[in-house]
Structures are given as structure tokens and as C-alpha cells.
Image 1 (spheres, rainbow, N blue to C red):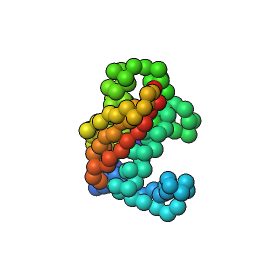
Image 2: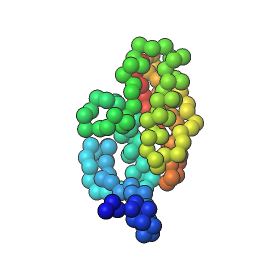
Image 3: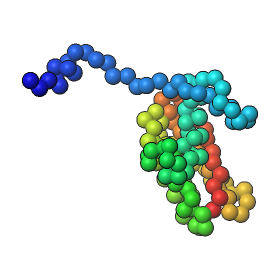
Image 4: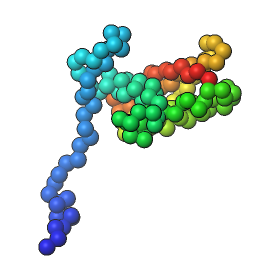
Length: 134
């Protein structure tokens, strides 16, 4: 006899989102110690996503990270809208991030683009930034 899926689902199971509880990174001391949750964990997740080059590390899935290496040598008029699109795409893979807005670009020196943005998460808004060599 083949089991009925509808009878199994009708048993009243509750589907819950997994918590964001994770190890805490202390970037200034270059170590991992303790644990963190919710908004602080989201700040870490965003930081890791935008600093991880996509497809470079076998430990991560093909959906994790951002592709930035091919922007080197491209004109600023191409890089700025591409950065906005790629950052948004990379972050929206995380279901806890609802949108990415308020992009601001700065050019502190030749060959460098500094991008700042706001990621809206289920735990609150997170301000983030990244410098990209072009």
C-alpha cells in the first residue's frame, strides 16, 4: 500500500523558519567566539555574502556569494548599475532579506568604487558597504 501524502499533511504539523542563531565573528580581533542571533546574525550573513566571490570556493553552493571579478577594467558607467543588480541578486537568495535599497556610490580613488546600501530584513534594516576594485 502506498502512503497518502494528504493524510500525513493533515496531522497538523507546523512549518517554522529555522532560527538565525550562529557563531559570532569578531572581525576586529579576527576570531570566532560565542554566538549571535537575529539582526546581528543578519549583519554577519550580509557581510559574508558580499565578500565571498561566487563559484570560487567549493564549500559554498552555486547560489552563494557575488560575482565581482569580471568587473575589473570595466567603465564606471557599467559597474555602478551592475553592482546594484548583483548585490541585490546575491542578497535576495536569503529568504530573511526582503529587499535591498538606498544604493549610494562613491569613488574614493581611481579604480575603486565604494557602494553603500540598506538591506531590509525580517529583523530590521541593516546598513552595509563594500569597496570594489575596477
